[in-house]
Image 1 (spheres, rainbow, N blue to C red):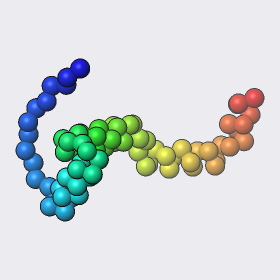
Image 2: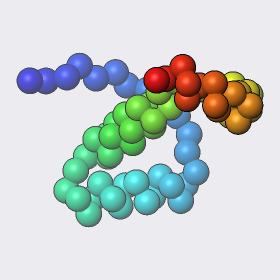
Image 3: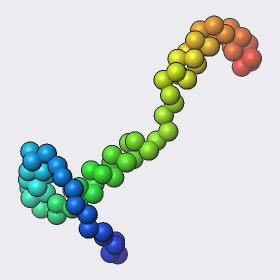
Length: 75
């Protein structure tokens, strides 16, 4: 099954570009496949919903303050 592709252009640090091209050559893969894999992994990592720092801090304070109450309610 063929996936449609769209051309685009961008700029990159020359050392990263060279390392990416070398990785593609070493693995016998096309440059675009290495780039696509890297972007997919980046998107997967960054699309997951993460709680905001202040929410986690408030939750931690709540656990410390009301730990006994939460334990009783859980029974």
